[in-house]
Length: 207
Length: 78
Ligand SMILES: [Zn+2]
Image (cartoon, rainbow over all chains, first blue to last red):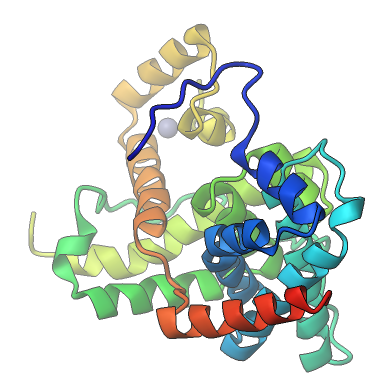
């Protein structure tokens, strides 16, 4: 039976109790955490590595590392934020291995004006989904976000899709809050501009 | 308010963190500027579409396999 929980100021995040139990050796509690966050961790890892096998390995390694380091986890951030930070670092390590010699960094700022002045101004907003099949739409969305610089797509994914706050995104990426904000705006505008190229075509002839 | 001033406030507007006063200035700009209105609508829709259509999903069979591997290692003290 579902119970109704009243969340107040002093209400603990449900993960706090799970982490405490896992620390005392309750593997079941840890399994609950794995079940809760494995999909998010996979998505984040895949956005960084852009490689399915690497992303699966990251899921495994990130949870094992978290389990190992559970004692070091300070309660002043959320378990999820802490876990994302571990996963981001593991993902970057794998990416660096694959791209030896290439600079791989979320920190590196990309000077780009792309999207910063919106150019494509067809209003496709009401319902672009209805013009595409599921697979076709998924392919467009995937290609579009894959084309963004690493730091942009990860900030967008964490902040806008996975629901982390600006501060949590900054913490898990090791970036400053202003850096997250500036990347988020540019990521949103670039995605908007790039999606416009697809969606406006289907709009043509409608008006 | 100019278009670039509007653009600088776009994120705060989308994230619902602008003051009442700024909000009314924005509304005034939008009522006379179709470009910014379209930018706002399509940016909102961009976020919404990525939220409702995950581009990467972990198949259940893989989830089960990964979880089993993780838990086996945890039970052995990693
Ligand atoms: Zn304007």
